Image (cartoon, rainbow, N blue to C red; front, side, top):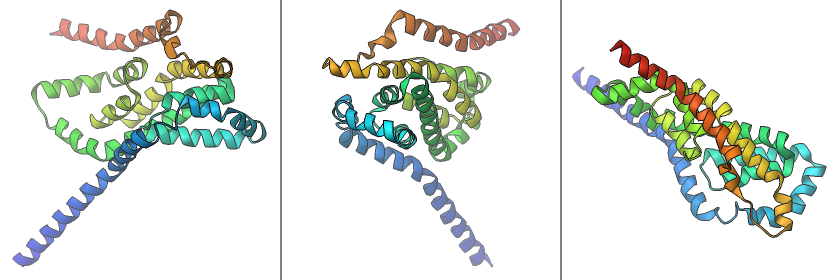
Amino acid sequence: MKRFKADSQMSETTQSQRNGFLRHVPLMVIFAVAVFGFFVLGDYLTFETLRDNREALLGWRDTHYWSMATGFMVIYIVIVAFSLPGAAVASMTGGFLFGLYAGTVFNVVSATIGASAIFLAASWGLGASLTARLESSEGAVKKLKEGLRENEISVLFLLRLVPVVPFFVANLVPALVGVKFRNFLLTTALGIIPGGIVYTWIGVGLGGVFDRGENPDVSLLWEPFVIGPILGLCFLAALPIFIKSIQGKKDA
C-alpha cells in the first residue's frame, strides 16, 4: 500500500513537471523564432525590400485586393507575435498599400492580434508561476502588485501611448505580472491607434519618398503637432493614478 502511494505520488510529480515544461513551450518557441528572426530576417524586412518590390506589390493589390490584405495581416501578426524586426516597416507598408483609413485598420487589428498571442503565451507559461509568487508576496512587492491592480487600465494605456516603450515590452510585462487579458486587449486595441495612425500616415507618402531616392523620415513622430496630442493622452491615462495617490495620502 505504501509503495502504491509512493508510486502514485511520483507519477503525479512527473506529470506535474511535464505539464510545467509544456506550459513554457509556446514562450520558448517565440523566443527561439525571435532570435532567429533578429539574425536572419533583419536584412529582408526593410524599406529597401519594399522599394525593390513595390511595383509587384501594387499590381497584386490592384488585382487581388483582399488576398493582399489578408496576406499582409498574417505577416504583420507573425512579426508582432514573434517579436521579429520590421514592425515599423510593416506599419508603413500598410499605409503604402492600402491608404490611411484601411491601412490603419489593418495595422491596428494585426498588431492587436499579434500582441494578444504573445501575451497569452507568456501568461500561460512563465507568467503563471511569476503571478503566483506575486500573489504570495509581502512588503514592497505586495504594495506594487496592489497598486498595479488598482490602476491596471491606466498603466496599460501608458505602456501603449508612451513612444519610448518598445512594443514587445508592453506585450510581455503585463503578462508576467498577471493583468487581466480583457484589460490588456482593450488597452492594446485603443492605445496603439494614435501611433498606428502616424506610422500609416508616413507610409502613405512612401511612393514619393522612393521616387526621390530617399528614406522614410520617421522623425515625424516627434513633431510637436504629433507628439503633443500623444503626450496629452498619456497625461489623461496617468491622471487617475495621480488622483488615487492624492486621495490615498489624504485618507492616511
